[in-house]
Image (tube, rainbow, N blue to C red; front, side, top):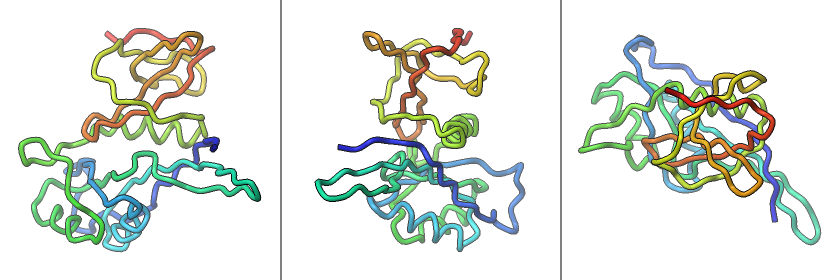
Length: 187
């Protein structure tokens, strides 16, 4: 049995010294399971800006409790770099990286707003849980409060109302309870 609390780990890193921020995009990378933290450290050492969101789980055993940090999206991480074969090769040559998330062989950029939404949840230590990826559903935005502007898909489960945030390129989602928040439909 475990309980979940959010504690984000955005590995502070230095971008490529010869790249310009305006020419860079975020990309999702696939990583061998249980190698996510090692890959984030290696990328930082290579000067690649990376983001590895993690959650803290409190594992309960009969004789002890232990807090363990685990990736929010196991098997995935995010890198910010210019769209260049040389930069992609630098990432692919990192031990544990198995590839970029692609469509027809071309790396798919991840919208920065989607990652900003995940960062906001981690920074506010909002409790969330893994949720199956949803393609269909009403897209909504929270209005007011500490989560003002957060967008996602509205889901209702009996008495529980949730907002599902999705990172489309890696087909992963997470859900937060939004009872008490004012929610409006996104046009």
